[in-house]
Length: 346
Image 1 (cartoon, rainbow, N blue to C red):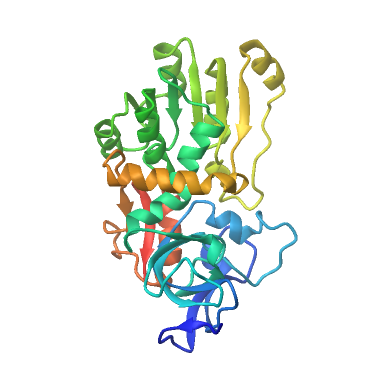
Image 2: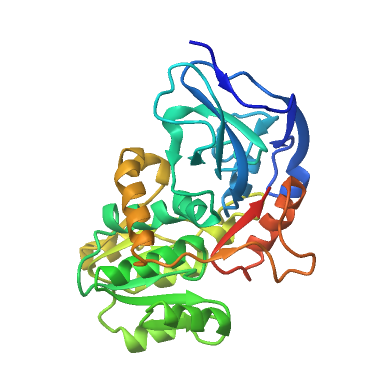
């Protein structure tokens, strides 16, 4: 059976990594590539919205692909529509709204296996947020945090893309939710979303607040910052508490990566609290994707979860549009002022 195509350009633009560094601008360049002809089981997606993730600079540094050599593609998630179908693809149609999660998303067109493509109701940026941020929050809290009713749950970087999902999901589980953030605007937003206690770490001392207001510790900690914040969280873990390491963004930018820290007392701390510390990387839970894809769509359609998107409207140079704005969007995310899921429109 021949490939099924619509009118496609002969070439397209995409971002590739040319140098291994955490400086996204230095690491990447926009190149022109020839439009491929999809093989059996493949789909070509015409991109509309691309998700920006903190870990993009881990990818450009080569931390995800040990021994990898440039050039290679980057970008993790995209929402668009089916532009072409290879043979043997029966579950998708031309023009259908779809989402894709996988390396190479910073591209005007993508040719990918159809089994990695997710049908969505419409080509809207909100569905983009569900791919990495939404799945990370829900799967992480369920499968690593084992959240349950009345748990005290601390979400670091609570106003970020994944943080906002984590706050709202923990509230649906009837947990007491504490969120950390960096501005009064974010404080108000988190309160509106049901956060029981919001800590602006630029005005309050996290260590002091946890010690005074939560003397029995925290049951579940969603940790994305690393460094001193991680150590503070560890010190405030409750009996049988679960600390989930979802990221360590404070150590992403430095070229040398994670700075050494003194965790010599970790075994004793965990033993005396029957606590646990576990890492969570979304790609290790692929088998959970179908269930949580449907769950997120259902929660959004029933208005049980609100999705906030940030296209850089408040930046001095305006909205993030086109591949040329991806570098600015990555820098914006790491600047700490974004609220919700940062994305770029093509």
